[in-house]
Structure formats: C-alpha cells, structure tokens
Image (cartoon, rainbow, N blue to C red; front, side, top):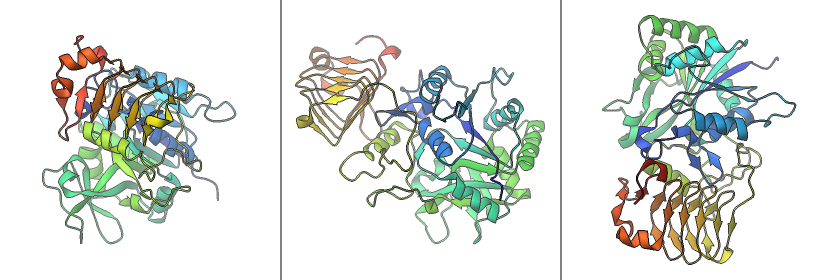
Length: 399
C-alpha cells in the first residue's frame, strides 16, 4: 500500500500571555526547556520521527527568535539536503497578519503547493512524545473526516482546553472551547476529555470548512471550525493515552503530555525531567528530541550537582545545585547554592548567593550585594504556586 502523503502545519504564533514576563520578547514555543531545547522542538520531533516529510511552521508573534532557532538548529536534520522545516510568517503568506488559528492555516495552505492525502495541524507549545502514525491509523480505520487528539485532564483544569464529548465509538458528539463549566467524562467524574490541539483532516473537508469560516468572518479552530465540523461530518477523538513510543522506561508516564501554558506548568514540567526515575526522559535514543544546541556541553562539579540538568555552555563549578535546570550559557559561581531553581539562558549567579524556588530570567546577574538589597527573594513577584520570578534582564530597569 502506498504511504499516505501528510502535509503538516505547526501552530507557533501565540503570545503566551500566561507565561509573562518570559514571553515579552519570545513566543511561547521559543522558550527554552530542559537545558538544551525549545518547546517547539517536541512537536517538530514527533512529526519528524513519525516520517512526515516537512513541517510548515506558522509564525506571528515576535517570530524572529523562532526563525533563528529553526534556521540554526533544524537545518540539515534530514539527510540528503531536503529541509524538514519551512517557516511561514504573515508576510510570506502575503498577509499583514493572521487573524486567528483558522486564518493562519488557510493562509498556509495558499502558500504551500503540495499534494496531500491528509493534513495535520499540530500545536507547537506542548511537551510530549507522540507517534503520529498511530493517530493516522485510527483516523483511517474510522473513515473520519477529522480527528482530534485528546487526553483526560483534571476537571478543575479543564476550562483551559477544548473539551470533547464522545460516544462509545469515539465519535465526537460535541466540542466546546474553554467552557466555564466543563463536563466530566462518562464514568470519570474527576476528569474531562480535552483536545491536545493536534488535528488530522481530509484535505477537501478542511479546505471547505476554512472557506466557510472565512465567509462568516470566523477565525478560530476551537471556537468556530471544529464545532461546525462536529455537526456535519465524521469527527473522532483519538485517545492519546493509547499512543506508545519505543524506548520509554518503566518509571516514565507512558503517554506523557503537558500543556506548559503558565509559569507554574512550565516549571512543573521541567521538574518531571529530574531525579533518578523522571516522569519524562529527554535522552530516548529510539525517539530522540531534535533541535539540540551545537555548543559544548555544560560543566558541573559533580560533588555539588544533584538531580539537575545543565545546558550547553553552562557552568556550575564549586556550587551546590539541587533539583534545578540550568539553560544554555547559565553560570553559577563557586559557593552559590540553588535548590529547585530554573536559570534561563545567559543568567549568572555569583558566589555566596542562595536561591530556592526561583526562576531567573535570561541575562540577569545576581550578586550577593544585590540579593541582600532586595531582601533575599522577597523583593520578587511570585507565581500562584510560590515560585519567585526574576524577569528577563532586558525587560526591566537595572535593580
């Protein structure tokens, strides 16, 4: 049987307002994660590892960091010279700006000339591993017009997602985007079935749906396109919990997926990478995460470096670093102590400074004198879960 031709779009244009202040200069998919990667690398790696020939990345909000990352980190990932990633901005699509997710995909379809049996539309801002081929098999078996990847989430957090209601055969009977009162799953009153923002479409169905949405002035997938498709077409929910990836260790969550849309969610997902039995391992050679930095590896004094990740070009000689993540180029001076901290790219902590449960934004230099002047970490804002937040240095006046 001839392999299906898949045209993939990755939605990477969101502002990520709930991740303020770290998204003032960066779109959410460009934020560093796990020392060596950007959030977008997970979606792109899943598509690449699933055999998709090319990923068209739709950019809008502050696109330059992502354009640079894709050009530097993803160039040459595919042997033979064919580029795997194609970046599409509103300017490249002859638009002043994209007016929503549906409008962005419609513009992308006009920019890409390619025959396709299926169109995949994937979110760029989640951390997970997924074999798209398994979702495609489900889609074809159900003879679906559209398929939505879905995952159970706690009911108290379900209002942040598109919520699907299905029958016994997984056909979607209703789709509601970010409902104020989400409905629970049948037989599971504590959880709701949430869209992951990953979709498969028959090309003719998607093109007709987007044309109809444009004629009505509708611009959003979750609020407009999907609810109308559910009313008129065969739309199914693919249970991501059944997706299996080779090389996953016994202690890991077999179908790990995290929406890192808030500061606390971004932090907690990085804690999932740490410890002797992490929930999610970055170093799975059978399903690798691509996009790593070409710089030399970080250097740490093994005696004081415990259950932590150090990114390329980072250093932590003579410092006590416990259950923390140092992004690329971060520096921790001798005698400093970090516990449950995230240091963004290029941040520097001088000797003698002790930090606990703190996110240090890119470019900061924290000296002992400055730390004392701020009254320790009491001078910084805190996330709802209590993480101290030091905004990126370039976004505020010198303290």
